[in-house]
Length: 239
Ligand code: URA
Image (cartoon, rainbow, N blue to C red):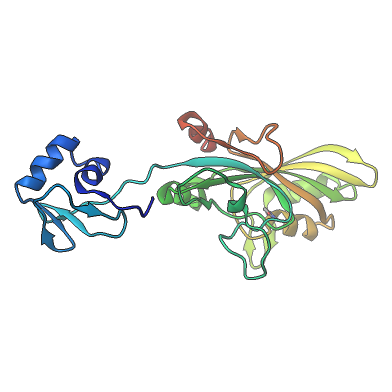
């Protein structure tokens, strides 16, 4: 949302009150107030997000366009909006988007991969709320070669910080020398969960990448790049 003053009728139309011509009529009929005062002339300018505008006594608010992006987060970026230690923040990678975006959930500093950014708070809550059990898939390079029994135990659930982990799906993808590449899908969002689970089984994570939210895959999006998500993409998150 810009802070540039705009004409009242234009602001009302942008907020979805009515067409600009009809908004002019509303103003002329004395039904609109700005900062507590009835405004009947057309030249009045307001600052979106700052001026208090009412129509028949009810507040009129700007609808910021909702935006959804899928970013391939590089290592070394924090997923908070600012960082007291001055480390780079993921939102600094987003260019030419005026919406005030925030990340949906978190990824560790040294984790890379799929990160959704949006300005839609309700959507963000839905993705993160445990009741929706949104699947998140990661690929991890782990130390050693875990036995099938160890994998089965992790899949069933382990006691982590006094609470059992929910069932997970784990696939052993390949061996890489002394290490193993695995894929894990979980629907919880506990802090550093994947790393803690594998550390618990004696196979610490050496490298971690989130590859999907539900059936929305990162694909070959280059590191540090992002793409807009459309309605069909958003549906895939909950599959
Ligand atoms: N699990 C982790 O351990 N780290 C992440 O960044 C995400 C999931």
